[in-house]
Image: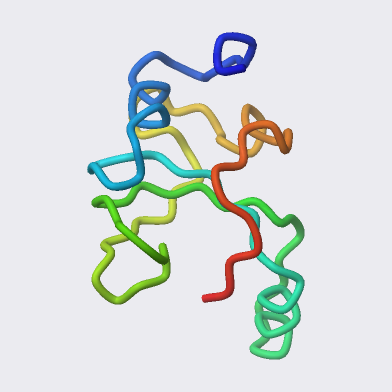
Length: 99
């Protein structure tokens, strides 16, 4: 339930509750094992599976070339480090993303 989740601030919570088709919105995605493996081959080590992003809204795949995406690590409103606030799987909007 959304009511039981603790958000860093009301403004980011508002972006989180917006449907993915409308923008801008805040999404927490869980990347796939394949993405982690491919990143490591490119010399990028990813220590966790969660990514935080702001999107312009999207209908189908988040990784579509038609979707504007900004990856963020800190809340743009209150400055909290997102991985400290949103580390539980209950916050994940979408899973198994390959980029």
